[in-house]
Image 1: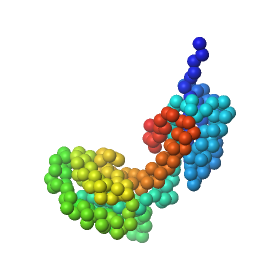
Image 2: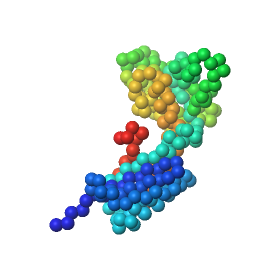
Image 3: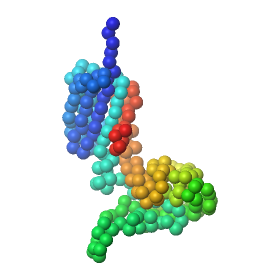
Image 4: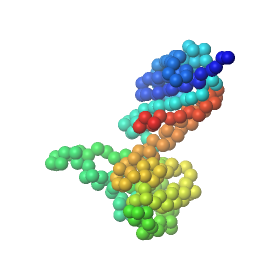
Length: 249
């Protein structure tokens, strides 16, 4: 009786090279390849590596039962500032969460200190009336009447993505989700990230920073992953394509 061991394909796309490995069973490496990363369409370099390892091992992409993909493209986009134009929406009175941060002074007594540039300048930071308590009770309802005015300001700012971060939304995400829905109904072209889904933890500065980063790279990664998935599906891949997170999961 002949048994066929499962095939797993792993592709890691870096800033310079794309690494591809084909594994049979638990840990038997059938083939590996290193190709140049194709920046115009990273899926091209990934496909070149995939076809190479398939040819070397006399296998086909349709036989792959496990597919995992990792990339530094999102990190590189943050470092190189190639992301979207992001606006933030915070609880009224907390417009300067990013500016104030933890006072953002890594050299406390340097009077000529130059602070790093923010992904979202103050002119693209907006607020709306709402308030949750620390245990998630509504202290002030979301002021839905001013949403059209808010969207007009966002449009005038040139933003194509929004990061929403309200006080204590980790305890109750109702207002963030409601504002996201209102924005999507009025402006479906805008990408919206909410902190209660991206990073539902206490401390608004940390939560807002993570949400801004998500909004900043979301349009880029959405386009990239769509092209990547379509390319491999068209070449015969039938299994789900899993993504490796920065935490290794």
